[in-house]
Image 1 (cartoon, rainbow, N blue to C red):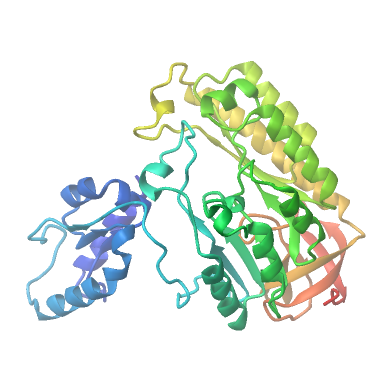
Image 2 (cartoon, rainbow, N blue to C red):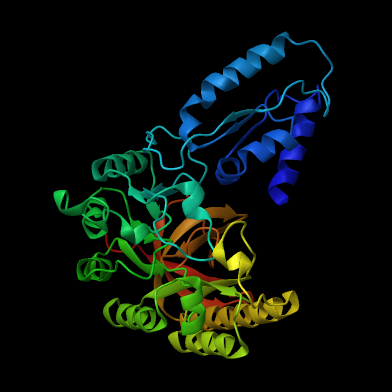
Length: 408
């Protein structure tokens, strides 16, 4: 609903002659999955573009601009004469060049997509149907993209994919390089300071990968692993890795990676989730001590097995269970922040807020985790400094003072 509302809002801009908007294109996952429906219901849209046709967008935009400049009719929301073009092909498509991209993040931090698609069959998820089969970005291509980002001033690279730590697993024996090798190559780039792993799957943590995370000083000691649940019956219905193996992995990571911070997300009120299942999830989450996390209520996805499962949970129950987990995560995050008081942490500055520099520790991902405020200290974004934590405020934000520079 939110996405459709955003499209309608954009259509109003297109209809306003005082606006510079002359074309409206819909792309991304929703376009790939619901192309025909969008074209039928939103005639204001010029084209619905899928993954296979991304490279054709510039030529279509130029055609739209040349046509609209020559059109003297008064536009309106109902003025579209034709159904939107549908430019949607296969979901599993080769990687297109991403070197020369417009960076939407701050200049010092960037996301690097290392793989696309998913081969897992989670019962709640529709992603494999419209993102295609798992495929790793070619090793040298991904490394070249990272090198260009660093040359442009990026100091932090956040690796992303549907299953980031599966990178390279589809190459077989012909190319034995995997994520551990990629981390090693990334860390050799001069100027790059932090490498962060987001969206990892609770498998594919080889001995080599765990050792690389533990010993490579540029790989921050922070791993994001969306687990979805920790009770065995629910994980089985979700078609996820089993509880015993998942918990064993988390305990191993805690043992082998010093000062590790774990982030995860959980689904609350999955079909068939009993009170006992939820209680087990809360118990294990508390015991494992996730320092960062989020929870959301289960929402049925069209065409997924879970959408038609028996035992759909009432919305009120979903919300109550979610609230309990969110409170648990907030408690854990606050405790982590309080425990940092008096310690010295690496901090990367993100922005200035008046006279204060605001940044993050290596244990905080951009936009989703906590912040560190350094009062009365003008520092350029991207600076990495060593900060002594003075106190944690009521919102969990750390406040500190610069005591030096981290080892280079």
